[in-house]
Length: 100
Image 1 (cartoon, rainbow, N blue to C red):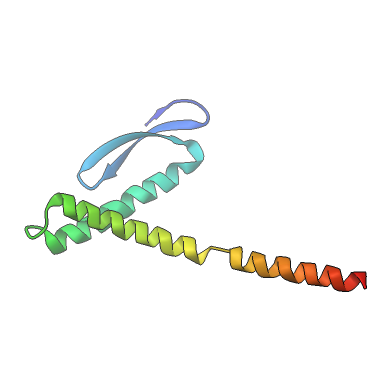
Image 2: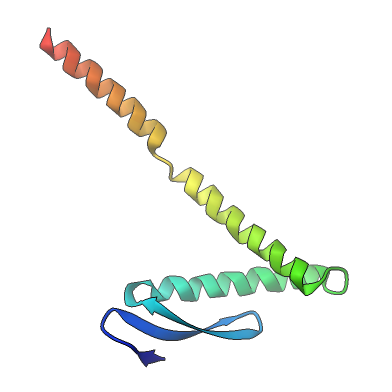
């Protein structure tokens, strides 16, 4: 792992059967390593289940869908906009009531 500067690092990630060199923000290194590990684990699971029945390309796409689905579920879980709307409406009602 060669250091580029104080903010960025050049790291090598092992993803399935490939070594990929990337430049990342220093504070995001652990996320990149965890992402590579997750992709490798999911690809291995699909490869074990479908090797010989599905092409490597399809297995890679299935892996991408799986990881994207995890992301979408987490994103939806953390969506606070419905609460923000309710709080804004309640705040407006309280402020209006206090004026009277």
